[in-house]
Amino acid sequence: MASNVRVCGVCDHRHVTKPSVVWCSECDEGLCEDCKEHHSFSKISRNHETIKITEYMKIPANILQIAQFCNKHNEKYDLFCRKHDCPCCRKCVEDHNDCKDLTDIRNMIHNVKSSTAFQEIENTLSETAENIKRLRMNREENLESLAKKRKIVELEVQQFRNKINENLDKLQNDILKEIKVVEEKESSKIRKLLTSLLHREKEIFEYKVNIENTKRYASDLQSFIAMKQIEKDIVKEESYIQSIYKGEQMHQINISCTIETALQELTTSMKTFGEIIVSSSACNIPIQKRRNKQAQIIVPPRTNKFDNVSLKLMQTIQTNFSNVRGCTFLPDGKRVFSFHTGRVMFFKPDGSIDFNLNTIGPVWDVVYIGETSVAVTSGGTTNSKQISIIDVENRKVKKTLNVNSANHGVTFKDGKLIYCASKKGLKMISLSDESITNITTSKMSSQANVATHGDKLFYTNEKNHNVTCCDIHGNTLWTFSESSTLSYPFGISVDNDGNVYVAGAFSHNVVIISPNGQHHRQLLSKKDGLMFPIAVEYDRSHNKLLVTNEDSNAFVYDVI
Image (tube, rainbow, N blue to C red; front, side, top):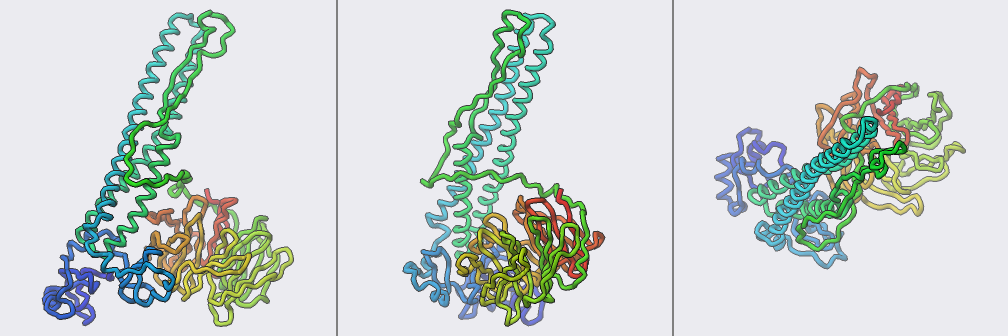
């Protein structure tokens, strides 16, 4: 998508500012009235389709961000690989030599908006929305029935209570309190599910609106790729519905009461007024399902505490050296700092220096990898294409990994190091056999840093002032870009709930970004002592945050 779709791209190249009135998807730029006329008569563009700029602006933002040219070779997409389910340019064929299902993409996108697959997505979205509505209405009905059942039980208890004397008042109050607690507990579970269902229902509605606008205004290629993306999201929604439908959350909750038999004998040995019984039965709502896909159990995510995150300063550490580039925690409470000047320093929990290493060569980022060891990257100089493994107990380098590329930010996941390789993208090296895997091949910024949480990766781009979230295969999930709030993002870390902490070197702050990238808050600023904060690390075992300025000071916070 052009940087300013409201300005004529042709005139802009001539340093003339004129408003665009139409958009050409083939040329990927807006055109003013004059250029529109030339565009319609030119031999090379007379067959290009254009739409009004007001209609183009209605295309969903995520659809506009779909690249119509190969990011790697800057060539137009000509082929589609069925094996890898991705578009390719002519130069990409070298990477698909073993793929037999390369098809002319023009055949794939022809009449895509009226294709059966596109219609299937629309129908599935409608079906999913209807299923969520049914589940929501069922839970609302169960809420009402719970209230009615509670009233029935209360009436039964009161009628029986009228048959006995005033000495049983205490027992009666106990049973009424118990049933209220039970109802509130069960109702709370249902309300929680209702909240989730309402959220899903809203998301499906947004999908339907986006599909409609895509179908009307987006290019065929955009529509095709969007269809593929949305199709994957629908699978998740269907899996969610099936997991809810088959799980205990949709069991019909009921409450009743059995009267203590001893009450009928009016003896003094009675301990309770009765027993509240919660019973449930499997949901019998008919769920529509267009495709015969195996449902998967989805583990409910932990409660997102994004809005409640706050910090309490616990310690200030004087590093006494400049050019900090990375930091990490050790399990015993020690902190480790890496300096671009070629130094790795270890500090005790009380903030005093334990020891330092300054003979291992170029140094960039540092990460704890278990077994009393840390990994240290070496940056981007021509002779520093290695990652060093330091034995903390023996205070020396025990192993060197040759990665044949620049290596800046690094994180650790499942026995593998994931590192930013500058022009070579995001890479992963196994510590067991030293095999290297490409996660992304797109060029990264020269000082990018990376963090991980679950099956997601998060990396910074200091030049573009943004933070990107992708999956373990390198597929972008969202990008956060608010340069007025976060300028020159450098260090990055993630807590247990998926909240992302980023150090803004030029904005002199630490910003927290929600797991979905939609919300952000500033947690720390200059008034908290931040001056060019470079590194940030979250200790998930002890809920602590370590923030390091480029020069001298580092701060340890309790995250509450």
